[in-house]
Image (cartoon, rainbow over all chains, first blue to last red; front, side, top):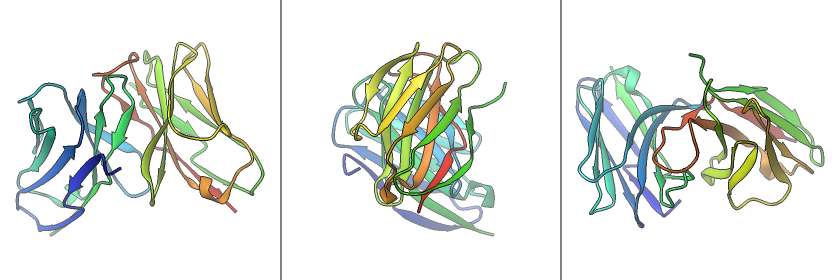
Length: 111
Length: 114
């Protein structure tokens, strides 16, 4: 959906490198969700952010929400091959739980 | 705690047929949402059920319908299948309805329409 833009669309990094994925909404956010998906499989829940300035971490993955800019960033530190997959951001813009998703960022990590 | 389960995992149907997909939410979760994922359109919201009532609906034709049972399990039905209905159908469960709740997805049902 163009209402939720993710960048970059794809990323290839060397193992051990840090990387950042961005997600920008054209409208107000009530909640921002990050998921990881392996090809053809279900979505793995990573984090949900609700408030501006909120930052959460899960292992080597950190996500922040900038409510003013209606933007979230997902940062992976010291990437590993296990981080490979497609990262999807989902936004709740109606405070109903109905999520709109970005097109995803496909990450490859080269050993 | 078991995660969200979906059955069947794979399905092949012919144009014009109908199909029913099933989703069992995480124990204690009462809301089930359905999404369709295709390479062209990405992930799109179909509908949400909570306490056996449809709470939210996406922009899909009436051929797509769903229901929820008293044990929170949900089914979605697609009638008069079209080639464009080929997709990965995902369901997500959450504790309640409304915003600001964590949503957990199942492994999906891959539907191929020939």
